[in-house]
Length: 298
Image 1 (tube, rainbow, N blue to C red):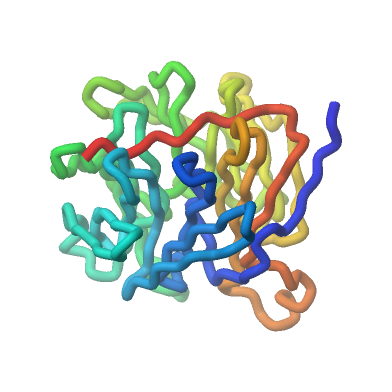
Image 2 (cartoon, rainbow, N blue to C red):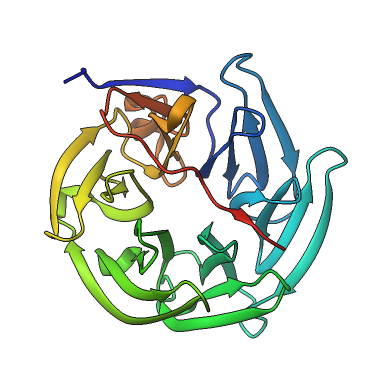
């Protein structure tokens, strides 16, 4: 068993780093700073960071088959042409909730972009039950799956594509839904894992090549590997910062894990104790590979 190594590879500190996705077309890691209102690309060979700044929070980013990226500024599904930084807006959602924004999202095995919303109202009090989960189809139509969500977060699909895993952070559970990959419809939502008190709350998530889930633990300082069939944690990797936001496999053969973090909401003493909060970490030696990300078909 190779030893697990964790290092901070992107030392730039992001307020709310999120949504890491490996772009194999260029061998780079793409990610967002939600509160910093930008999409970034980091090249592990040159260590250089490229940034496109936007004028609203960016919940997540994903690959687009025709080139460039799809992303979620505010409550909009949109595409970004990286070369000229032009933005094409596809669809607006939650128009009756001006304080909402899109949060985490991912492309499903058939090339649809699934993402959910949450309230941006800052505590006190955080407005609960304001979010919903949506799918953007290749023809740019949008379908709502369900509402009454607190913080729509991490999602991914089982290896046979019949199950979608989903986190609504404030429920402190990892959920599963039956998934019809032909239509993109969901049903039969149920819990597969309940977070323990020291694990923080479930944030971003990805699946590995063995069908196990890796969940970023916000305020828990770790990523945990869950066996969704058994409903239990089978591995824990601790990191030197508390606010772990998302994880994704990348690098050669998808055998490295990239983990984003945040410093948003930390006071000076906390930040002094964890100076690399908001950086991006690479974990090697996990002994398991990831699955290449899907790209949006529209």
